[in-house]
Length: 238
Image (cartoon, rainbow, N blue to C red; front, side, top):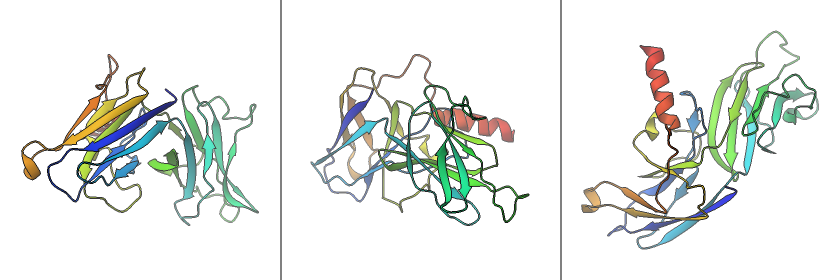
């Protein structure tokens, strides 16, 4: 699906302070991923706001020690890029050559970034980086503390997570565990337009409810990325 247009309708009876937050979670997400609210929609009572879901992916890296940033670049599925340190331009992302050592590291559906950062001032010390993934130029998920010659892979899952909450500071400040109680919507393969209706049965003290037209269409063996990650985290700590 190249482009799906969403329209979110606020059908609450009274004004509230909460926004509708929308999250994207990549497939095979790990428990240490940090997520951002990909959409934060401030919708007045009776109003609606739209947004587009597309496979337009960008990536940016940041050093964990100096907090310096690379420029954000567009990356396509199947591509491998390397984070490197340039003497002139500093931290940057460069696409792996076809005959490069990491060239075959991505599946046709994955975007991959390798940490190849070496600081000439401290060549024997590993430089950890954070890899930040964006969709439609909005922040999605970050992989912190990526070690030298390790990789971060991103494959967009055709599902979204909806919740209502007071807006927070922008940034990667959510965990996978926090998404466990949100409403997951699997985009039907044939969908081009999706209408989301936000209600709160029982009034202001009720539970936020999201309904979808067309309805969610999970794959036969669908298991959400947050659930997988939380099970893995539980097993690791057992």
